[in-house]
Image (cartoon, rainbow, N blue to C red; front, side):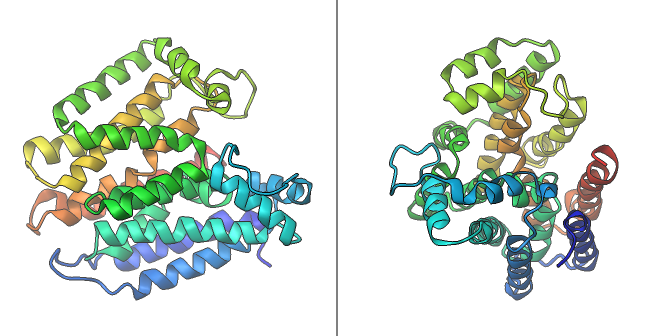
Length: 353
């Protein structure tokens, strides 16, 4: 079996190599790419990640493994905090000797749903889009550590991708909420962007949130804590030493600003009219703005992820949606992907090393 410590490096190496292989193969937006290469990669990652060692290297993986047979599950509990996940985990713990089936199921949900969203958004360039999502900052962590949040986020991306088919979108929306209670916020934002369409005000709101964060205005953080459930309140008010950095994160603000700057150019300068892209951008601006209002909490990286899981889709959407192959956003596609990939590698190999 592969050593647990090597997993993140092998994962990154594999995705980087495949990205270099496929990055020159951008297809015309009117072609449809074969799903086979993407499906093979998806299957490999599902099995490799799902059958990983039960090691502290993977964060909460070891917690699930250690407490597997200690779960007190007496049957279906409609009041469980994470309605679907908790009941599924409880049932599995009674029927399997260790947590491996849970890890395989969650890896399947994350990898497959991400691929489904990529296929819907980018039928002509599915593989490259999938690779960009897999190399995104925190993707590996949410495959192996925050598996509940990662699975819920992948389900939610399917809901966003299929907003033009509500009979698909709504069930996936509810499934995401059932897997992790934090998806209350994305679901609420989903409803907002369904009715309010003016892009200008989403940009104004994001700038206002940035100002509040820079000025250390904590009113909204306290307000959100008051409206949150017990877990949400703990994320925002805890003073525990969790081993990470809190305060005004200029590095995360710069990282978060890339889709915002690109979105402003695409919407107001290039004047791209694409309903799915606009909905995705409006979702990101809203949830990322809310994170900035709560930036000084101890665990707000978990709130940040509620916007960041849509990040890779926003970075590459204009590159694949603009038919004009000579447009700067298309010709500079490699640059955007390399920057995106380099940030993740820097955080993994330098910042958190």
